[in-house]
Length: 414
Ligand code: SAH
Ligand code: SF4
Image (cartoon, rainbow, N blue to C red):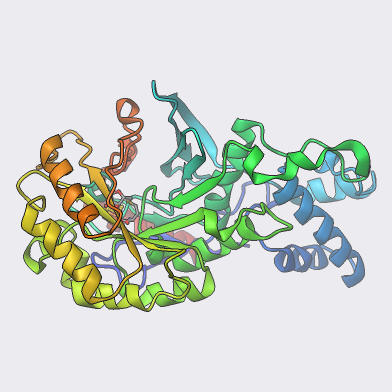
């Protein structure tokens, strides 16, 4: 049974307890969502199937789970009528629970989701003319406290499990009605086009929701492997981008083991300002960070690293800042593009967004140097779905409360 003992996140700045792995279900059944094929096979063997059966069944179930989005064993038509209830007695295929779904006037959609043990988190879907991007969360809250980010003000943090991460993508496909409709036992029943990513609304994934994905590396990697697997959700790694605030020791590993596009939340070009607004900079400074970008496996002119730069009035938005940004990109010879993000306000934030003319001037300096520096249009601001606005209400707990909960959870786990 899954272990709910509390553990610390490696390398975090402000240690907080986080629950590990999947919460056991009251009915004793095991949730297969988020598990790889080998683990499903192992569970089938432990439940009594012989190795040959377990191998065949795990292959079938894996296909139904991730390629078809099926949650009901009774609909897995190539599994015998006798075997289906055997599975349903022992296993389930879950999804994150939907607390609320909101629609912005610009077409952006936001879902407030809840884990089985009651933690709330959010995912956002952003459609535009050429693509549909799902913004996926990796943690409940974030330990890193960037001063301009609402998520950073959430006190309670827990890593999301692989099932809760890939479950967001599955849920989006459920909501968008995007699973292949045919039956796998009747090959002619479906047209080829149903399998093509470009025919779909959900074409891209960005790990830019709540949390720092590189502080939940293993779970993010395991979830994205299911997303990228041709027999799974089958989305190309070129359509997936992971954004980090600069967890330098994990960046190389990310390129090696996940291989997706990298975005880096740079936001400032001097030590003083970056120390202030992105506090992880005190641990891993700008030079180290840019060196890690230069070493990022797979980065090339065809697959550039994106630098995210939030535009904060009178803080990081001068012409000198723009020129220094260009100089740094050149010094480290980085295949880079810059995304200028107008600051999205939230109640109590200590910053204002730079004026549009200032942002334009900043962008012009970057473009004039030959580097792409577009200004991003904020999406979903009216439903608090824009960058840095994600925050759930339920998590404002004091340190004392968290310590008490951690102690209680540890006691029950014994
Ligand atoms: N934790 C990761 C990924 C999630 S944040 C990271 O920091 O990279 C996604 C992007 O939104 C980051 O670049 C983040 O710095 C930016 N962001 C945070 N708060 C913002 C705000 N209020 N306005 C605009 N962008 C913001
Ligand atoms: Fe965390 Fe990213 Fe927000 Fe910083 S910007 S607090 S790293 S989610």
